[in-house]
Length: 520
Image (cartoon, rainbow, N blue to C red; front, side, top):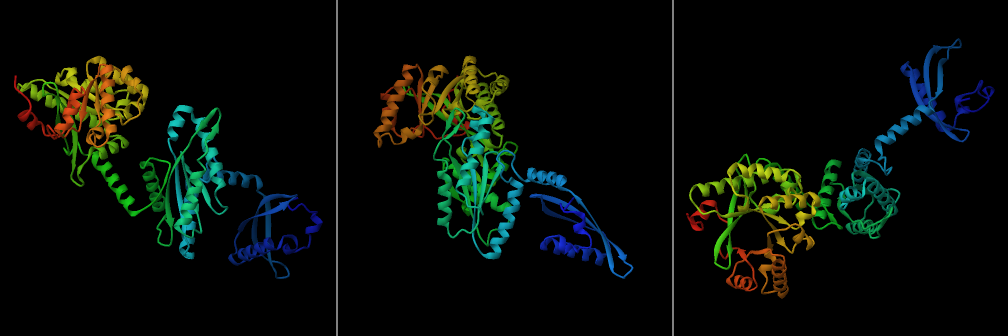
Protein backbone atom coordinates (compact mmCIF):
# COMPACT_ATOMS: atom_id res chain seq x y z
CA UNK A 1 0.00 0.00 0.00
CA UNK A 2 2.85 2.38 0.88
CA UNK A 3 4.67 1.69 -2.38
CA UNK A 4 1.53 1.14 -4.44
CA UNK A 5 2.69 -2.34 -5.57
CA UNK A 6 1.39 -5.89 -4.86
CA UNK A 7 2.94 -7.41 -1.72
CA UNK A 8 4.09 -10.41 -3.81
CA UNK A 9 6.37 -8.00 -5.65
CA UNK A 10 8.24 -7.25 -2.41
CA UNK A 11 8.84 -10.79 -1.18
CA UNK A 12 12.43 -12.05 -1.35
CA UNK A 13 13.66 -8.82 -2.94
CA UNK A 14 16.53 -6.57 -1.92
CA UNK A 15 15.74 -2.91 -1.25
CA UNK A 16 17.87 -1.87 -4.20
CA UNK A 17 15.41 -3.78 -6.37
CA UNK A 18 12.44 -1.94 -4.86
CA UNK A 19 13.59 1.66 -4.48
CA UNK A 20 15.10 4.09 -6.97
CA UNK A 21 18.94 4.09 -6.92
CA UNK A 22 19.34 7.25 -4.80
CA UNK A 23 16.84 6.09 -2.19
CA UNK A 24 18.28 2.56 -2.19
CA UNK A 25 21.74 4.01 -1.49
CA UNK A 26 20.29 6.13 1.32
CA UNK A 27 18.62 3.05 2.83
CA UNK A 28 21.83 1.06 2.59
CA UNK A 29 23.85 3.71 4.44
CA UNK A 30 21.13 4.05 7.08
CA UNK A 31 21.04 0.27 7.68
CA UNK A 32 24.84 0.10 7.96
CA UNK A 33 24.74 2.95 10.49
CA UNK A 34 22.10 1.18 12.60
CA UNK A 35 24.17 -2.03 12.61
CA UNK A 36 27.47 -0.29 13.40
CA UNK A 37 25.98 1.74 16.24
CA UNK A 38 23.73 -1.15 17.31
CA UNK A 39 20.78 1.13 17.91
CA UNK A 40 17.58 2.39 16.35
CA UNK A 41 18.04 4.65 13.35
CA UNK A 42 15.04 6.74 12.23
CA UNK A 43 15.06 8.21 8.73
CA UNK A 44 12.64 10.11 6.52
CA UNK A 45 12.25 9.80 2.76
CA UNK A 46 9.75 10.54 0.01
CA UNK A 47 8.40 8.68 -3.01
CA UNK A 48 6.15 9.40 -5.94
CA UNK A 49 3.04 7.28 -5.43
CA UNK A 50 0.25 7.49 -8.00
CA UNK A 51 1.86 10.69 -9.27
CA UNK A 52 1.85 12.35 -5.85
CA UNK A 53 4.73 13.05 -3.52
CA UNK A 54 4.37 11.04 -0.31
CA UNK A 55 6.51 11.30 2.82
CA UNK A 56 7.51 8.32 4.99
CA UNK A 57 9.33 7.57 8.20
CA UNK A 58 11.38 4.36 8.48
CA UNK A 59 12.53 2.95 11.82
CA UNK A 60 15.56 0.66 11.35
CA UNK A 61 16.34 -1.62 14.29
CA UNK A 62 19.22 -4.18 14.34
CA UNK A 63 18.06 -7.43 16.03
CA UNK A 64 21.24 -9.54 15.98
CA UNK A 65 22.47 -12.49 13.90
CA UNK A 66 20.17 -14.86 12.03
CA UNK A 67 20.49 -18.69 12.09
CA UNK A 68 22.82 -18.55 9.12
CA UNK A 69 24.98 -16.01 10.97
CA UNK A 70 23.85 -12.93 8.98
CA UNK A 71 23.09 -9.56 10.53
CA UNK A 72 19.34 -8.99 10.67
CA UNK A 73 17.41 -5.72 10.87
CA UNK A 74 13.72 -4.90 11.09
CA UNK A 75 12.44 -1.91 9.16
CA UNK A 76 9.03 -0.44 9.99
CA UNK A 77 7.81 2.29 7.67
CA UNK A 78 4.80 4.57 8.07
CA UNK A 79 3.15 7.27 5.98
CA UNK A 80 3.80 10.71 7.51
CA UNK A 81 2.54 12.78 4.56
CA UNK A 82 -0.18 14.58 6.54
CA UNK A 83 2.06 15.51 9.46
CA UNK A 84 4.84 16.48 7.05
CA UNK A 85 2.52 18.82 5.17
CA UNK A 86 1.48 20.42 8.46
CA UNK A 87 5.13 20.75 9.45
CA UNK A 88 6.05 22.30 6.10
CA UNK A 89 3.08 24.64 6.33
CA UNK A 90 4.16 25.80 9.78
CA UNK A 91 7.72 26.30 8.52
CA UNK A 92 6.38 28.37 5.63
CA UNK A 93 4.28 30.49 7.99
CA UNK A 94 7.32 31.03 10.20
CA UNK A 95 9.54 32.06 7.29
CA UNK A 96 7.16 33.91 4.93
CA UNK A 97 4.98 36.99 5.03
CA UNK A 98 1.30 36.05 5.07
CA UNK A 99 0.19 39.00 2.91
CA UNK A 100 2.73 39.07 0.06
CA UNK A 101 3.89 35.42 0.40
CA UNK A 102 7.46 36.72 0.26
CA UNK A 103 10.24 35.51 2.57
CA UNK A 104 10.12 37.39 5.87
CA UNK A 105 12.89 39.07 7.86
CA UNK A 106 14.01 35.80 9.52
CA UNK A 107 14.20 33.88 6.24
CA UNK A 108 15.94 36.74 4.44
CA UNK A 109 18.63 37.10 7.11
CA UNK A 110 19.29 33.37 6.85
CA UNK A 111 19.63 33.64 3.06
CA UNK A 112 21.83 36.72 3.36
CA UNK A 113 24.19 34.87 5.71
CA UNK A 114 24.56 32.04 3.18
CA UNK A 115 25.13 34.43 0.26
CA UNK A 116 27.65 36.44 2.26
CA UNK A 117 29.73 33.31 2.91
CA UNK A 118 29.51 32.35 -0.75
CA UNK A 119 30.65 35.81 -1.90
CA UNK A 120 33.65 35.69 0.43
CA UNK A 121 34.62 32.20 -0.78
CA UNK A 122 34.14 32.94 -4.49
CA UNK A 123 35.50 36.50 -4.23
CA UNK A 124 32.49 37.82 -6.17
CA UNK A 125 30.22 40.82 -5.52
CA UNK A 126 26.59 41.32 -4.64
CA UNK A 127 24.23 44.14 -3.72
CA UNK A 128 21.63 44.70 -1.04
CA UNK A 129 18.70 47.04 -1.72
CA UNK A 130 16.47 48.38 1.08
CA UNK A 131 13.20 49.93 -0.15
CA UNK A 132 10.61 51.95 1.75
CA UNK A 133 7.30 53.15 0.28
CA UNK A 134 7.08 56.93 0.73
CA UNK A 135 4.11 58.22 2.76
CA UNK A 136 2.68 54.72 3.17
CA UNK A 137 1.34 55.59 6.63
CA UNK A 138 -0.74 58.40 5.12
CA UNK A 139 -2.33 55.92 2.72
CA UNK A 140 -3.16 53.55 5.57
CA UNK A 141 -4.49 56.35 7.78
CA UNK A 142 -6.60 58.04 5.11
CA UNK A 143 -7.70 55.23 2.79
CA UNK A 144 -7.67 52.28 5.18
CA UNK A 145 -5.52 49.22 5.74
CA UNK A 146 -7.27 47.21 3.00
CA UNK A 147 -6.04 49.70 0.40
CA UNK A 148 -2.60 49.65 2.02
CA UNK A 149 -2.50 45.86 1.88
CA UNK A 150 -3.55 45.85 -1.78
CA UNK A 151 -0.79 48.33 -2.54
CA UNK A 152 1.82 46.09 -0.89
CA UNK A 153 0.67 43.12 -2.99
CA UNK A 154 0.83 45.16 -6.21
CA UNK A 155 4.27 46.50 -5.27
CA UNK A 156 5.44 42.91 -4.79
CA UNK A 157 4.24 41.97 -8.28
CA UNK A 158 6.01 44.92 -9.89
CA UNK A 159 9.27 44.26 -8.05
CA UNK A 160 9.26 40.62 -9.12
CA UNK A 161 9.19 41.72 -12.76
CA UNK A 162 12.68 43.23 -12.65
CA UNK A 163 14.46 40.49 -10.71
CA UNK A 164 16.24 37.43 -12.04
CA UNK A 165 15.55 33.96 -10.61
CA UNK A 166 18.59 34.00 -8.32
CA UNK A 167 17.66 37.34 -6.72
CA UNK A 168 15.85 37.27 -3.39
CA UNK A 169 12.95 39.63 -2.68
CA UNK A 170 11.61 39.78 0.87
CA UNK A 171 9.22 41.87 2.90
CA UNK A 172 11.07 43.19 5.90
CA UNK A 173 8.01 44.50 7.69
CA UNK A 174 5.46 47.29 7.28
CA UNK A 175 6.18 49.06 3.99
CA UNK A 176 9.79 47.88 3.75
CA UNK A 177 11.18 45.47 1.16
CA UNK A 178 14.70 44.13 0.71
CA UNK A 179 16.32 42.70 -2.42
CA UNK A 180 19.50 40.64 -2.56
CA UNK A 181 21.27 40.33 -5.91
CA UNK A 182 24.31 38.11 -6.51
CA UNK A 183 27.03 38.18 -9.19
CA UNK A 184 27.28 41.94 -9.54
CA UNK A 185 30.02 43.03 -11.94
CA UNK A 186 30.34 46.72 -11.03
CA UNK A 187 28.70 49.71 -9.36
CA UNK A 188 27.29 50.66 -12.77
CA UNK A 189 25.54 47.30 -12.82
CA UNK A 190 24.00 48.09 -9.41
CA UNK A 191 22.84 51.52 -10.59
CA UNK A 192 21.24 49.89 -13.63
CA UNK A 193 19.26 47.55 -11.37
CA UNK A 194 18.36 50.43 -9.03
CA UNK A 195 17.01 52.44 -11.96
CA UNK A 196 14.91 49.48 -13.12
CA UNK A 197 13.48 49.15 -9.61
CA UNK A 198 12.68 52.87 -9.38
CA UNK A 199 11.04 52.78 -12.82
CA UNK A 200 8.56 50.17 -11.59
CA UNK A 201 6.95 52.98 -9.60
CA UNK A 202 6.72 55.49 -12.45
CA UNK A 203 3.17 54.41 -13.32
CA UNK A 204 0.28 55.01 -10.87
CA UNK A 205 -1.26 52.09 -8.96
CA UNK A 206 -4.97 51.46 -9.63
CA UNK A 207 -6.48 50.19 -6.38
CA UNK A 208 -10.24 50.07 -5.98
CA UNK A 209 -11.47 53.52 -7.04
CA UNK A 210 -8.13 55.19 -6.34
CA UNK A 211 -5.26 55.98 -8.69
CA UNK A 212 -2.21 56.31 -6.45
CA UNK A 213 1.09 57.91 -7.45
CA UNK A 214 3.64 56.02 -5.37
CA UNK A 215 7.34 56.67 -4.90
CA UNK A 216 10.00 54.82 -2.97
CA UNK A 217 13.19 55.70 -1.14
CA UNK A 218 15.98 53.16 -1.49
CA UNK A 219 19.30 52.48 0.18
CA UNK A 220 22.01 50.32 -1.41
CA UNK A 221 25.06 48.50 -0.06
CA UNK A 222 27.69 46.75 -2.18
CA UNK A 223 28.56 43.30 -0.82
CA UNK A 224 32.11 42.02 -1.31
CA UNK A 225 34.77 39.97 0.49
CA UNK A 226 35.25 42.78 3.02
CA UNK A 227 31.59 42.89 4.05
CA UNK A 228 31.02 41.87 7.64
CA UNK A 229 27.97 40.24 9.21
CA UNK A 230 24.38 40.38 7.98
CA UNK A 231 23.18 42.62 10.81
CA UNK A 232 25.72 45.30 9.89
CA UNK A 233 24.92 45.04 6.18
CA UNK A 234 21.22 45.54 6.81
CA UNK A 235 21.95 48.42 9.18
CA UNK A 236 24.16 50.15 6.60
CA UNK A 237 21.57 49.78 3.85
CA UNK A 238 18.83 51.04 6.16
CA UNK A 239 20.96 54.12 6.94
CA UNK A 240 21.34 54.79 3.20
CA UNK A 241 17.57 54.44 2.73
CA UNK A 242 16.83 57.02 5.43
CA UNK A 243 19.38 59.32 3.83
CA UNK A 244 17.43 58.99 0.57
CA UNK A 245 14.26 59.98 2.46
CA UNK A 246 15.98 62.99 4.00
CA UNK A 247 16.89 64.21 0.50
CA UNK A 248 13.24 64.48 -0.46
CA UNK A 249 12.24 60.86 -1.14
CA UNK A 250 11.85 59.23 -4.58
CA UNK A 251 15.57 58.50 -5.00
CA UNK A 252 18.25 55.96 -4.11
CA UNK A 253 21.49 56.42 -2.20
CA UNK A 254 24.56 54.24 -1.68
CA UNK A 255 25.88 53.64 1.81
CA UNK A 256 29.09 55.48 2.67
CA UNK A 257 31.21 55.73 5.81
CA UNK A 258 30.19 59.39 6.09
CA UNK A 259 26.56 58.27 6.38
CA UNK A 260 27.53 55.86 9.14
CA UNK A 261 29.16 58.70 11.08
CA UNK A 262 26.09 60.90 10.64
CA UNK A 263 23.84 58.06 11.80
CA UNK A 264 26.02 57.56 14.87
CA UNK A 265 25.89 61.26 15.71
CA UNK A 266 22.11 61.27 15.28
CA UNK A 267 21.76 58.26 17.56
CA UNK A 268 23.98 59.81 20.21
CA UNK A 269 22.05 63.07 20.00
CA UNK A 270 18.86 61.09 20.63
CA UNK A 271 20.49 59.52 23.68
CA UNK A 272 21.84 62.85 24.96
CA UNK A 273 18.74 64.96 24.37
CA UNK A 274 16.73 62.86 26.82
CA UNK A 275 19.10 63.94 29.59
CA UNK A 276 19.51 67.55 28.47
CA UNK A 277 16.92 68.96 30.88
CA UNK A 278 18.30 67.05 33.87
CA UNK A 279 21.85 68.12 32.97
CA UNK A 280 20.70 71.74 32.58
CA UNK A 281 22.06 71.87 29.02
CA UNK A 282 19.13 73.86 27.60
CA UNK A 283 18.97 77.64 27.77
CA UNK A 284 16.75 80.35 26.32
CA UNK A 285 17.89 83.44 24.48
CA UNK A 286 15.57 86.33 23.63
CA UNK A 287 15.51 88.44 20.47
CA UNK A 288 13.69 91.81 20.56
CA UNK A 289 10.75 92.50 18.23
CA UNK A 290 10.51 96.18 17.29
CA UNK A 291 7.40 98.14 16.28
CA UNK A 292 8.35 100.25 13.28
CA UNK A 293 5.98 103.20 13.71
CA UNK A 294 7.60 104.31 16.98
CA UNK A 295 10.77 102.17 17.08
CA UNK A 296 9.58 100.63 20.36
CA UNK A 297 10.38 97.10 21.53
CA UNK A 298 6.98 95.46 21.96
CA UNK A 299 7.92 91.81 22.15
CA UNK A 300 10.59 89.15 22.40
CA UNK A 301 11.00 85.81 20.72
CA UNK A 302 12.17 83.01 23.01
CA UNK A 303 14.78 80.91 21.21
CA UNK A 304 15.85 77.55 22.61
CA UNK A 305 19.54 76.67 22.62
CA UNK A 306 21.26 73.39 23.47
CA UNK A 307 24.91 73.14 24.50
CA UNK A 308 25.75 69.45 24.77
CA UNK A 309 28.79 68.17 26.67
CA UNK A 310 29.77 65.87 23.78
CA UNK A 311 28.69 67.74 20.63
CA UNK A 312 28.90 71.35 21.79
CA UNK A 313 26.26 73.78 20.49
CA UNK A 314 23.61 71.85 18.56
CA UNK A 315 21.46 74.04 16.25
CA UNK A 316 17.65 73.91 16.75
CA UNK A 317 16.99 72.79 13.18
CA UNK A 318 18.98 69.68 14.04
CA UNK A 319 17.78 68.78 17.52
CA UNK A 320 14.07 69.68 17.26
CA UNK A 321 13.47 67.03 14.59
CA UNK A 322 15.38 64.51 16.71
CA UNK A 323 13.27 65.41 19.76
CA UNK A 324 10.10 64.95 17.69
CA UNK A 325 11.24 61.58 16.45
CA UNK A 326 12.23 60.17 19.84
CA UNK A 327 9.12 61.47 21.62
CA UNK A 328 10.90 64.06 23.77
CA UNK A 329 9.41 67.19 22.19
CA UNK A 330 6.58 67.37 24.74
CA UNK A 331 9.03 67.56 27.65
CA UNK A 332 11.03 70.25 25.84
CA UNK A 333 7.90 72.29 25.06
CA UNK A 334 6.77 72.11 28.68
CA UNK A 335 10.25 73.15 29.84
CA UNK A 336 10.38 76.14 27.47
CA UNK A 337 6.92 77.46 28.40
CA UNK A 338 7.67 76.96 32.08
CA UNK A 339 11.03 78.76 31.85
CA UNK A 340 9.62 81.67 29.80
CA UNK A 341 6.73 82.19 32.24
CA UNK A 342 9.19 82.00 35.12
CA UNK A 343 11.31 84.71 33.48
CA UNK A 344 8.28 86.91 32.76
CA UNK A 345 7.20 86.63 36.40
CA UNK A 346 10.71 87.61 37.49
CA UNK A 347 10.69 90.70 35.26
CA UNK A 348 7.25 91.65 36.60
CA UNK A 349 8.33 91.27 40.22
CA UNK A 350 11.40 93.43 39.57
CA UNK A 351 9.20 96.25 38.28
CA UNK A 352 9.87 96.03 34.55
CA UNK A 353 7.16 96.95 32.06
CA UNK A 354 5.01 94.08 30.81
CA UNK A 355 6.22 92.66 27.52
CA UNK A 356 4.94 90.03 25.11
CA UNK A 357 7.01 86.88 24.52
CA UNK A 358 6.67 84.62 21.46
CA UNK A 359 7.20 80.87 21.86
CA UNK A 360 7.59 78.42 18.98
CA UNK A 361 5.36 75.35 18.95
CA UNK A 362 6.74 72.37 17.04
CA UNK A 363 4.66 70.87 14.27
CA UNK A 364 4.26 67.66 16.24
CA UNK A 365 3.11 69.42 19.42
CA UNK A 366 0.39 71.47 17.73
CA UNK A 367 -1.32 68.23 16.72
CA UNK A 368 -1.56 66.77 20.24
CA UNK A 369 -4.98 66.71 21.86
CA UNK A 370 -3.69 67.55 25.36
CA UNK A 371 -1.52 70.48 24.30
CA UNK A 372 -3.87 73.33 25.30
CA UNK A 373 -4.46 71.94 28.78
CA UNK A 374 -0.72 71.48 29.36
CA UNK A 375 -0.12 75.10 28.37
CA UNK A 376 -2.85 76.36 30.70
CA UNK A 377 -1.55 74.29 33.62
CA UNK A 378 1.87 75.93 33.27
CA UNK A 379 0.82 79.53 32.56
CA UNK A 380 -1.68 79.63 35.46
CA UNK A 381 1.11 78.86 37.93
CA UNK A 382 2.80 82.17 37.17
CA UNK A 383 -0.26 84.42 36.86
CA UNK A 384 0.79 85.67 33.41
CA UNK A 385 -1.90 87.32 31.27
CA UNK A 386 -2.65 85.15 28.25
CA UNK A 387 -2.39 88.08 25.81
CA UNK A 388 1.28 88.49 26.73
CA UNK A 389 2.15 85.09 25.32
CA UNK A 390 2.35 84.54 21.58
CA UNK A 391 2.59 81.11 19.98
CA UNK A 392 4.28 80.78 16.60
CA UNK A 393 3.14 77.89 14.41
CA UNK A 394 4.82 76.91 11.13
CA UNK A 395 2.73 76.38 8.02
CA UNK A 396 3.83 72.75 7.81
CA UNK A 397 2.64 72.27 11.39
CA UNK A 398 -0.92 72.94 10.28
CA UNK A 399 -0.85 69.89 8.01
CA UNK A 400 0.00 67.40 10.77
CA UNK A 401 -3.08 66.00 12.49
CA UNK A 402 -4.94 68.84 10.80
CA UNK A 403 -8.24 68.61 12.69
CA UNK A 404 -6.60 68.55 16.13
CA UNK A 405 -4.13 71.30 15.15
CA UNK A 406 -6.93 73.62 13.97
CA UNK A 407 -8.96 72.91 17.12
CA UNK A 408 -5.95 73.74 19.32
CA UNK A 409 -5.25 77.01 17.49
CA UNK A 410 -8.85 78.16 17.77
CA UNK A 411 -8.96 77.25 21.45
CA UNK A 412 -5.72 79.09 22.28
CA UNK A 413 -6.89 82.21 20.49
CA UNK A 414 -10.32 82.13 22.13
CA UNK A 415 -8.55 82.09 25.51
CA UNK A 416 -6.66 85.26 24.61
CA UNK A 417 -3.26 83.97 23.50
CA UNK A 418 -1.75 85.59 20.41
CA UNK A 419 -1.27 83.29 17.40
CA UNK A 420 1.06 83.84 14.47
CA UNK A 421 2.07 81.86 11.41
CA UNK A 422 5.84 81.49 11.37
CA UNK A 423 8.00 81.36 8.22
CA UNK A 424 5.07 82.33 6.02
CA UNK A 425 5.56 81.48 2.35
CA UNK A 426 7.75 78.43 2.91
CA UNK A 427 4.98 75.91 3.67
CA UNK A 428 1.92 74.50 1.98
CA UNK A 429 -1.08 75.81 3.89
CA UNK A 430 -3.93 77.32 1.94
CA UNK A 431 -4.73 81.01 2.29
CA UNK A 432 -8.09 80.07 3.77
CA UNK A 433 -6.27 78.91 6.91
CA UNK A 434 -5.39 82.52 7.67
CA UNK A 435 -9.05 83.48 7.62
CA UNK A 436 -10.57 80.35 9.13
CA UNK A 437 -8.18 80.09 12.06
CA UNK A 438 -8.24 83.79 12.93
CA UNK A 439 -4.50 84.27 13.38
CA UNK A 440 -3.29 87.56 14.81
CA UNK A 441 0.00 87.86 13.03
CA UNK A 442 1.96 86.69 10.03
CA UNK A 443 5.75 86.38 10.08
CA UNK A 444 7.65 86.82 6.81
CA UNK A 445 10.46 84.29 6.58
CA UNK A 446 14.05 85.54 6.66
CA UNK A 447 14.80 83.75 3.37
CA UNK A 448 12.75 86.43 1.56
CA UNK A 449 14.41 89.27 3.48
CA UNK A 450 17.99 88.10 2.93
CA UNK A 451 18.15 88.59 -0.86
CA UNK A 452 15.34 91.08 -1.34
CA UNK A 453 17.62 93.52 -3.18
CA UNK A 454 19.18 90.78 -5.28
CA UNK A 455 16.01 88.97 -6.31
CA UNK A 456 13.13 91.23 -7.32
CA UNK A 457 10.84 88.24 -6.89
CA UNK A 458 11.45 88.38 -3.13
CA UNK A 459 10.35 92.01 -3.04
CA UNK A 460 7.16 91.11 -4.90
CA UNK A 461 6.44 88.29 -2.45
CA UNK A 462 7.03 90.58 0.55
CA UNK A 463 4.72 93.29 -0.80
CA UNK A 464 2.02 90.76 -1.70
CA UNK A 465 2.27 89.11 1.72
CA UNK A 466 1.91 92.42 3.55
CA UNK A 467 -1.07 93.39 1.37
CA UNK A 468 -2.70 90.00 1.98
CA UNK A 469 -2.20 90.28 5.74
CA UNK A 470 -3.60 93.81 5.84
CA UNK A 471 -6.70 92.73 3.91
CA UNK A 472 -7.33 90.17 6.65
CA UNK A 473 -6.51 92.57 9.51
CA UNK A 474 -3.36 90.65 10.42
CA UNK A 475 -0.23 92.29 11.75
CA UNK A 476 3.01 91.57 9.89
CA UNK A 477 6.44 90.94 11.36
CA UNK A 478 9.57 90.29 9.32
CA UNK A 479 12.46 88.27 10.71
CA UNK A 480 16.12 88.32 9.70
CA UNK A 481 16.35 92.10 9.18
CA UNK A 482 20.03 93.06 9.13
CA UNK A 483 20.30 96.38 7.30
CA UNK A 484 18.68 99.81 7.44
CA UNK A 485 17.83 99.48 3.75
CA UNK A 486 15.78 96.36 4.45
CA UNK A 487 14.02 98.09 7.34
CA UNK A 488 13.18 101.13 5.19
CA UNK A 489 11.65 98.94 2.48
CA UNK A 490 9.53 97.03 5.00
CA UNK A 491 8.35 100.22 6.72
CA UNK A 492 7.50 101.83 3.38
CA UNK A 493 5.27 98.90 2.43
CA UNK A 494 3.41 98.66 5.73
CA UNK A 495 5.22 96.02 7.77
CA UNK A 496 4.33 96.44 11.47
CA UNK A 497 7.26 94.85 13.31
CA UNK A 498 10.73 93.50 12.63
CA UNK A 499 13.35 91.45 14.38
CA UNK A 500 16.92 90.73 13.39
CA UNK A 501 20.58 91.52 13.87
CA UNK A 502 19.99 95.17 12.94
CA UNK A 503 18.65 95.64 16.46
CA UNK A 504 20.04 92.70 18.38
CA UNK A 505 21.26 89.15 18.24
CA UNK A 506 19.41 86.69 20.48
CA UNK A 507 20.74 87.41 23.98
CA UNK A 508 20.34 86.22 27.56
CA UNK A 509 17.47 87.39 29.76
CA UNK A 510 19.78 89.46 31.99
CA UNK A 511 20.96 91.51 29.00
CA UNK A 512 17.38 91.95 27.78
CA UNK A 513 16.33 93.57 31.05
CA UNK A 514 19.53 95.63 31.18
CA UNK A 515 19.48 96.90 27.58
CA UNK A 516 15.88 96.91 26.41
CA UNK A 517 13.32 96.85 29.25
CA UNK A 518 12.15 99.94 31.11
CA UNK A 519 11.05 99.99 34.73
CA UNK A 520 7.59 101.22 35.56
